[in-house]
Length: 463
Ligand SMILES: Cc1cc2nc3c(=O)[nH]c(=O)nc-3n(C[C@H](O)[C@H](O)[C@H](O)COP(=O)(O)OP(=O)(O)OC[C@H]3O[C@@H](n4cnc5c(N)ncnc54)[C@H](O)[C@@H]3O)c2cc1C
Image 1 (cartoon, rainbow, N blue to C red):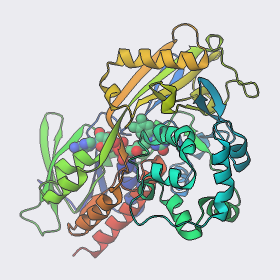
Image 2 (spheres, helix red, strand yellow; image 1 turned 180 degrees about the horizontal axis):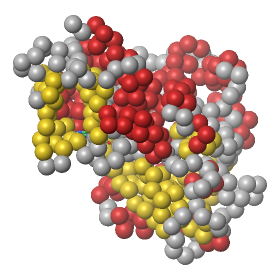
Image 3 (cartoon, helix red, strand yellow; image 1 turned 120 degrees about the horizontal axis):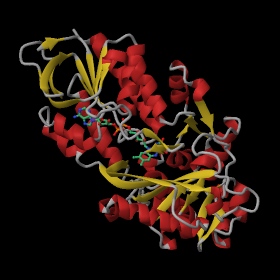
Image 4 (cartoon, rainbow, N blue to C red; image 1 turned 90 degrees about the vertical axis):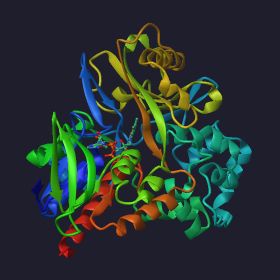
C-alpha cells in the first residue's frame, strides 16, 4: 500500500471537484477519485444533430463563490447570462399566464384572488414571529398569505426547482433567508425590500456556458490533471492500522485491479446513501443519519422541434421566456418545461427550438419507474397540448434519476447538525455534497469551499 500525505476527495460531481480545486488553490496535495466514466456527476451536456442538451441542471444562479471559481478557471469568456427579465409562465386552466416577478405584478396577476392580494399588501404592516417548531413551506405560506398563493405559485415553484412537496419541505432548511426575514423584521416583504435596497436592487440572472454546463466540471478536471481519475470506485475506508490514528486506508477498484492507498484526510463528496455505505465502518450513527436524507426521483425529457410545428406565441414576447411551471391542479404529469433555446444561444439548429421537461418529484414518485419510451410519450403529448405542437419531435432524450435531489424536509436541519457533530468527533473525515447547504450548483460550490478550508486547517493542525 502506498502511504501518501495526500487528501483524498471521493466523488467527481461538482461538490467533489470544487472541493479538490479549492484544496489545490490552498496549496494542498489532493487526489480525486470518481467511479463513473466522466466527471460532473448529475451535470452532463450532450450534443446531437445540432442540438445541445444539458442533462441534469439547466442553468445556475450567479453566486459570488461560483463567479470566483469561473474566474479562476478562465471560463469567464464562455459564460452566458439569460435575460433576467425573461418571463416565466404558470399554466392556469390550460393557458400560460406570466408568473408575477415584482410586487406590482403580484397585485395584477389573475393567479391570485383579491383576498390574497390584500394579505400581500397588508403583510408589511403586520408583525409576526415564526413558530418555534420546524415549519413546512406550505404552513408558512398559508399562515402569511393564504392557500391560493401556495397552490398557484409556491407549490409549482417547489415542484420545478426542488422536485419537492411543500407540505414536507422545511422553510428553515430550504429557505433559511425567508425565515430569517420574518425573524429579523417581523415581515418578509418589508425585510426583502430593505435588503433589496441595501444590495442596490440587482436581480441575479441565470447563467450557463456556451458549450453547456459540463464545461464547468471539465475545466476543473482539466486543471486537476493526473490528480483526478475516473473509473475509480472507492469500496472501503478504514483507519490505518499501522500508521498514526490520523491516517486512513482506502480501497478502490480501478479497472480489473483492486488498489489501496494511505491518506491523511478524506472528503466524502457523495450522495447520502453512498456516503452512508462507506462510512458505516467508522460509526453506525453515520448510516443512521445519512439514511434519513430523503431524495426525490426525477425524469427529464429533452426535445427538439421545428419552429413551424409550434403554434404557441405569447402576444408580446413570442416564444421568449424561461419556460413554464405546472400547478398540480392542472392534472398534468409535467412539473415544468425549460425553453432552452430561448434562454441561451447555441441550443438548437436554425429554425428549431429545444425544450427540457421534468416529471416526477415527491408528488409523483411512481413515474420514475416508467420506461424511457413511456416517459418520452407523456412529455411529448403534454408539451404539445400546452404549446400547440403538431407532429412528432425531431429528437428526444430521456434521463432518469431514482434519487435526483435531496429533500430538505422537516427535521433536515437536525440531521445536518448531528452530522457536523459526528464529523467533528471523527478527525480527518469530512462530508460535502448537495444534502448539506443547498442543492443548487452555487450552494454546492460554496459548501465545498468551506469544507476545503476546514480540511486545510485540520492538516495544518495535525501532528
Ligand atoms: C434533474 C436535476 C436538475 C437540476 N437542476 C438544477 C439547476 O437547474 N440549477 C442548479 O443550480 N442545480 C440543479 N440541480 C442540482 C445540482 O445539479 C446538484 O445538486 C449537484 O450537481 C450535485 O453535485 P454533487 O457533486 O453533490 O453530487 P453528484 O453530482 O451526485 O456527484 C457525486 C459523484 O460521486 C460519484 N460516486 C458515487 N459513489 C462513488 C464511489 N463509491 N467512489 C467514487 N465515486 C463515487 C458519482 O459517480 C458522482 O459522479 C439539479 C439536479 C438534478 C438531478
